[in-house]
Amino acid sequence: MAEKPKKPQKLKARLPRGLEDRGPAAINATRAMVEKIRAVYELYGFEPVETPAMEYTDALGKFLPDQDRPNEGVFSFQDDDEQWISLRYDLTAPLARYVAENFDALPKPYRSYRFGYVFRNEKPGPGRFRQFMQFDADTVGSATPAADAEICMMAADTMEALGIPRGSYVVKVNNRKVLDGVLEAIGLGGDDNAGRRLTVLRAIDKLDKFPADEVRKLLGPGRWDGGEEGKGDFTKGAELSPADADIVLAVTQQRADWREAIAAAETYLAKSEVGRAGVSELEEIAKLVAASGYGADRIRIDPTVVRGLEYYTGPVYEVELLLDTKDEKGRPVRFGSVGGGGRYDGLVSRFRGEPVPATGFSIGVSRLQAALTMLSQLDTQAAFGPVVVTVFDRDRVADYQKMVAQLRQAGIRAELYLGNPKNMGNQLKYADRRNSPCVIIQGSDEKARGEVQIKDLIEGAKAAAAIASNQEWRETRPAQFSCAEADLVAKVREVLARHDVAWG
Image 1: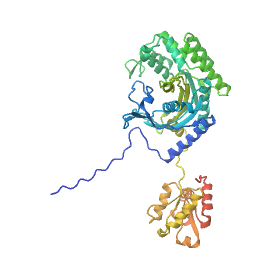
Image 2: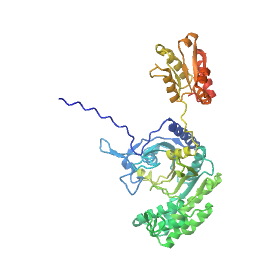
Image 3: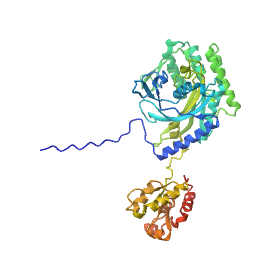
Image 4: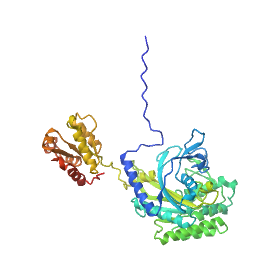
C-alpha cells in the first residue's frame, strides 16, 4: 500500500526578537514628530543628507557601540568580493565617511541633518530594540564652542516644538576634557589605567541615579546592590583613595548655578591643561546660551554627563525628560535621556589624516515617541481612512470607478470596494474597519434618479451610541442622505469638513 503523501508543513509566521511591526497610528505619529523636528533643524540652517543603511565595517573602525566587545554590537556580513559590511549602528559614523569622501565639494562648516533606522546587535529587553529610529543634526568643520551652544539651543527648541513644556525637560551639558582632567588629577592617565578610568566614568554616570555616598562606594572598593554586604549583586569599584574620591565628587557635584560648577572645576583642575581647556569651553557655552535667553531651566551645566561612545572629545550633552508618569500597569516611569551628542573631532579625521572638528546631536525618535505617547502629547488614534465607494450592482463597476476617480481628482482619498460585493453589510463593515468617514451607495433606483446616497459613518456612530432601540435606528436611518450625482464631490467635502477630516 502506497504511503500517503505528507502534507506540507505550514510555515509559522513569527517576528524576530527585538523588532516590532508598526501600524498606521504609530507611523502617522512618527511622521508628525519627524516633521516637527525637521522644521526646527531647518530653522537653524541645517540641510538634509541621506546615507545608506550599510557601510564597510572598517569605516566604523574601533568606534563600535560597545568598546568591551569590539566584534559584537553590529550586524555584519561579507559581500561577494569578501568585503565586510555592517548595518549602521548610528547616523554619525556614516556621516563622517560621507563628509570625508565629499570633503572638497561640501561647504565648510557643513551643517546637515538626517533621520532613519539604526541597528544594534544587542540582547533585546523591555524598551530596548535591535532596530530604532534616530534624527541627527551635525556641524562639521567648526571648532568654536558656539557650534556646541547652538546644538544645545536647538535641542531645547525641538523639545518645545514637540509639545514638551518648559520645566519638563532639560539639556544637560558637560565636557569630556573636564572628565579627562579629573582622571589626570587623580593619577589615572596613560594606557595602563584604561580599565580603572572606565570604572570611574561609569560611577560618575550613576550620580543622577544614586546618592553621592553610593557613588563613593563605586569609586572605592565597590557596592552591593542590596545596600549591605552580601545582599544583591556586587559591583567592583575603581579602588580610589578617599582623597581621590573626594576630588571626583567635588568636580562632578550638581550645582544650582553654572558659575559654581565652573569655579569648583577650576579649583581642582588648576594643574590639568586639558581640564582647564574643558572648563573654558563650558564657560563659553554657558555665556552664549544665557545671552540668547536660554536659562538654567532649559540648558544647564551638569558635570555628571558622561555619554557612552568613545569618540567624544569635548562638550557632551543629553536631553532628559523630567516628567514622571505611569505605565499601562500603573507603575511609575521616569524616561530619562531621550537624546544626546557631543563633539567628536577625531571621527572625520580618521579618513582625512588632518584635524576636522565636528559636533552633533541625536534624538532617539522611537524612545521619545514612546514617552510622548505615554504623556498624551501624541495623537495615537488611527487617522481616518479613505471614502469607500460601495458596489451595489456588479454590472456597474465602471460607474462606481468613475465616482472614485472624481473624488481622487478633487484631492479626496477614495477607494472602490474590491472584495465580494454580494453582501452590502460586509462592505459597510469593511468601511468601518478602514475607519472611513463616509461611504457612497448607488443602487438602480438612485441611478435612475441621477442620485447617490452618502452615509456619514462618523455621525452614524455617534447616533448609534445615543439610540438604544435597533428599531428606532432603522426607522431614522441617521446620517444618511441623498444628493445629485453632480454634487457628489461637494457633499463629501461637507461631510469631511463637518468632522475636520483632512481631504488628502
